[in-house]
Length: 144
Image (tube, rainbow, N blue to C red; front, side):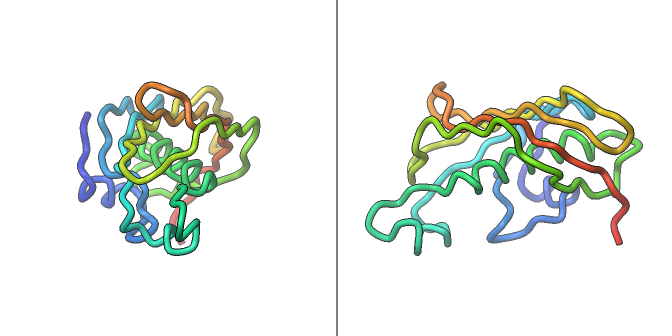
C-alpha cells in the first residue's frame, strides 16, 4: 500500500510543520512501513538549527521514524481511528548528518507487541547509508 501526504493525514494527527513523512512507499498493516521525507532548506527547524550550517535535528528524524511506525500500526483494522503515542527510545544512534537535499528513507518494523504496547525497530537511510537507528516504544490509545 502506498500513501501520499493527504492520505497519511487521514491516519495520523500530525500537520505542518510537524508532519515529517511525505509519502509511505510500502505498508504492511500492523507489521511495518517504509516512508520518505525530502529535506529542504525551507523547513522551520533550520531557522535555528543551525542558520549557517543546516543540520536536521536527530530528534526530528526519530519523530519521522515514529510517524512512519504509527502509520503501520494505525492502518491495522482494529487500530483505525486510534492514536499511537511515543513511550520511549532505546539504542538510538546518530550515524550521519542529514541536510537539505537529502531524501530520508524511513523504515519501521514492529518487532514486539503486548496488548496496546510494543516496540518498533527503526532505521533512517540517506542514499543507502544509515543516518539514524533505534528502538521506539509505543502505546496505542483511544483519541480523547
